[in-house]
Image (tube, rainbow, N blue to C red; front, side, top):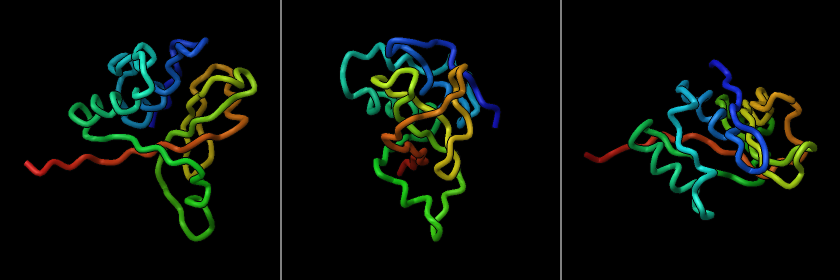
Length: 129
């Protein structure tokens, strides 16, 4: 995997989530939609509407998923972790995780998260066609 850094930062208009998606799917960050321009809370659904036909995946978010990474159950896969940073404690930030641990922060500070809100996993979309 080639980790991608975000190209836009600040004030809720950053593309950290796109950087994470681009890294995991190995695609150019410029090819992804600018979700921060969507004026509603349903941005993840709209994002999945883009991902399914164009990349064959969708993302699902799990909150309080720490138990997935416990001793008896490992998820050996990359995923996105969302939460807050000390830099911007009021804005959500996205980083790349592996087995619940941060492996790449796409922000130039590389500071990671101070509080985790949830984990996003990629799932393959199957068509019945």
